[in-house]
Image 1 (cartoon, rainbow, N blue to C red):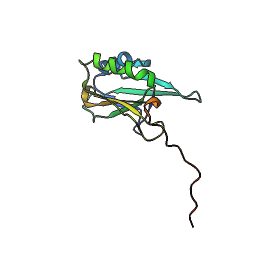
Image 2: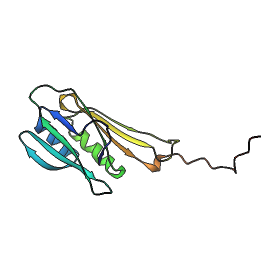
Image 3: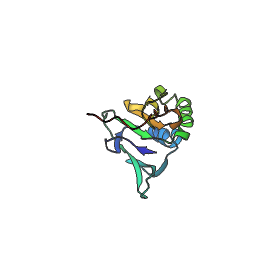
Image 4: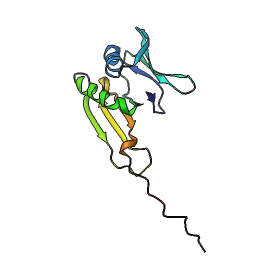
Length: 146
């Protein structure tokens, strides 16, 4: 998994227990640190060996809702969607969309969104190359302009 947003990967939340259940149990993220003031989850490691994390920090006052944009592997997408639906006691407005016949090479997106506690949103995105439309075949070299 990797974070897809330009927003910071540290988010304030009031209900750490509910958010822990979502990120640890629903998404299956490994919790690296858990204290009374927050927790840190491992999203994954990039090709250079850098670990990407998501930090949840305890807040005592209501916070502005945020969107968590996370890219997941295509082969994990279906399982994660089933988990989202299984945890409907924590999640609201679960929507799953799958594009078909995308005309852009390798961008047939599969997207799941849901509302988390405290009004935050989770967006899981995966690319499914098998759903992309074939690229048009060139019939020959482009004609020269006069």
